[in-house]
Amino acid sequence: MAITIKADTLQALADWKAGKPVRSLELGHVHRMRDLPDAAPMIDTSKRFHNDQERAHAFVFAVIEHCQKFLFVQDPHELFLKQCSIVKEEFPELTPEERTGAESLAWKALLVGWRKAIAGHAESEYIEVQRSGVAA
Image 1 (cartoon, rainbow, N blue to C red):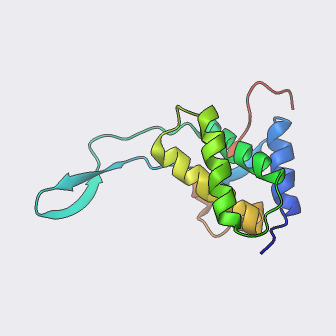
Image 2 (cartoon, helix red, strand yellow):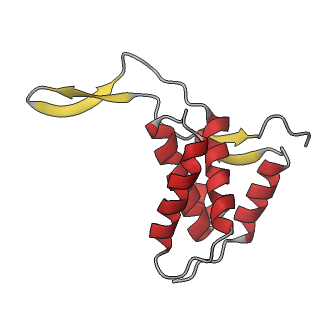
């Protein structure tokens, strides 16, 4: 199965690289799970985590850019995961939740395009992200 990267995903990548705002979703979780003896894990609301959206999205776009260089033919998901493991070395500060969310968004954007990848959420869940240090 060959994958052709959709034009809107490439446009989101170009906008990110140019320092322009990109409409997206918040990545990562604000709470962690707490293990309980003899019970199912539950959400630990005692501490709220801040996820660095710029850093997480920098990873998303680095993965997309890296995957852009390869022809996805035989096993695209296996190749994608290999590229993620290469790119994640450049982002050692990502939390596991940020990395998982970023990889999920990147994979979906590569498969169906950026707009479809972020579609279907409540308006309050959308954010704008922008690469800092670049004059738009």
